[in-house]
Length: 403
Image (cartoon, rainbow, N blue to C red; front, side, top):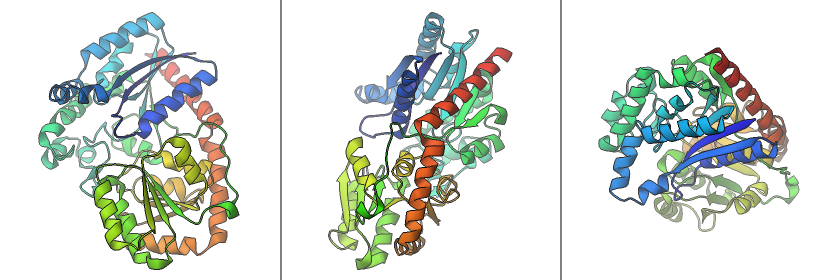
């Protein structure tokens, strides 16, 4: 099979799980003998253009005829069986799906975030989940609340893109199969008429390679957070929980970087005993994985819906229990398979209550660690990911043949 994989890389200063998911699929397909053709753009190129960059990004996120024409020519030349798109924002636009019109190339879109209805892409407004634009079938709330970077001017082109392509039926007309990362995400989009249920498949992020869980007794008695240090991730709630926990709290390792790092480090210094919270900054994957593998607990205190955080697949692969907020799909991913517990989003007291109960019950934590590794083997291994991807591609090609 020949597969054309399409992706707009987010800026290198803000490491993205979407970039990693795209690269994982490239390698997965190559390892199984498929011919892979890549078509990528980079947001860094816009940032390098200074004042002109944001203007170009604003235009191309609505409609990029140049990218569409280049893809059309590439499809005509290579004749791929499938064009699988991971991210079109901001340099490609949903218009690129029209490039496969008149060809036998099936089209697939992975829904890594909520940008098909939400200008912010996170389903979050301020510090609360928000679905107004989906519920009301309008982008006016996004403009009213300046949902992208707290700027009405910056929000406007994204809102225009969402509104335009929904009115044109771009996704409905040109996409043969959708990949939702979770059942929650699929149900949300389908129930609001954003995409068709019969074309939408659930395929979670996966962990490549053959990871192994560390023996429980050999692990460090510490808790780990991995992710971007931004307001939507809820790390301030995590620090407040450590303040409430007091001197009995185990060490907390915070891996990652972002715009709130300085504020969060100051908050930790002022409110928590010295040495209890350690900020490592951004780390390369091998070092991050080594810390995760030796941890006894991972915490995801996000305020946003999330797609499928990469740290979940890593915690599963290394057999580490999780404590997650009860927003979006997080609780269903962790609680239902018995891999961890959930707390009320944004509530530090609820978080510390769950943490203390779990930390004080090592037998329960061991049981959750085993369940996490079982979840990896069943649903998040390379083998499971490849089988599910081939199933989606087969459905997309069947759909294309009926057009």
